[in-house]
Image (cartoon, rainbow, N blue to C red; front, side, top):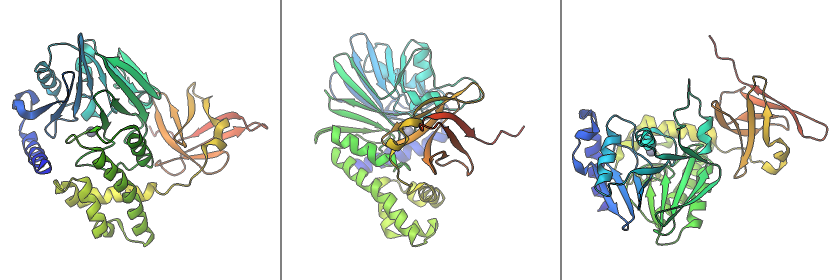
Length: 378
Ligand SMILES: [Zn+2]
């Protein structure tokens, strides 16, 4: 029943979106408000308006988890909807990640004094000019944030899965977890090796009664998240298995076992993903390109971690997280590394030939790091 209802809402959203230019012209029911407690609410917009939004009410203001889409008018429409819950100003916005469908109202509320809370990897996104993901008042979370707002403890864990800057947000008192796009009721899975690791971590942090709030879609259960996690693992293994049998991406998308998985991720309600063969084929292709990776022990690369200078006054930082290695340069890039030898590391998913190399001292500490990236052509 819930599935069918969501399907209807999703389809209406889809049909309505192109005809409406201003989101604030939309009917009031474009955002559904679910009351969890006197202090905690979840807003679910129709499709096209972006992410679900968590709302925590304190005596002196509101804290939001995600801020819907960037399209014009959505911010004001969100502000208007919040007034139905409370007149208090938005004090904080926690972004589950930097995508535009989750950060739309950041600018609007930041200009009114709200503090934006993001995972620190937003610093490493590349933009021509100033990084729009950085705000005058902002907290950057390295690994974990713990705060209390209006008596509601809030815990955010940094993760790398849907993006390099994911935050999984727990409200332990209300027993809710905000997954961002690490889970969806009509979407998934993430094409990331880290995805099952992150999902299993969440499963071990919650109990049978925890309510799961996906980035998009309806509030769901731990059981659903468990199935989602199992099917994420299955997605990779099924594709790899067919790939080994030399099936093409097109052939894979026609296999019943694969179709069943796609139906699960689309919630059996929205065939758009399943029927958009081009899109699904692209996802299969990406999975094949990325998996399986050579496994290695990041402990072997302990000496490589930390900041190293590059020739152009920039510095490159090598970090390890969840047994994966990353390189990151402020305002330029963050990428997963895949060591191909003791001194040469490829960037996962980048063009062939793009890599970094290490000059090592006799004691195996790093003397110098060289970045091998093609120069942009003028
Ligand atoms: Zn999203």
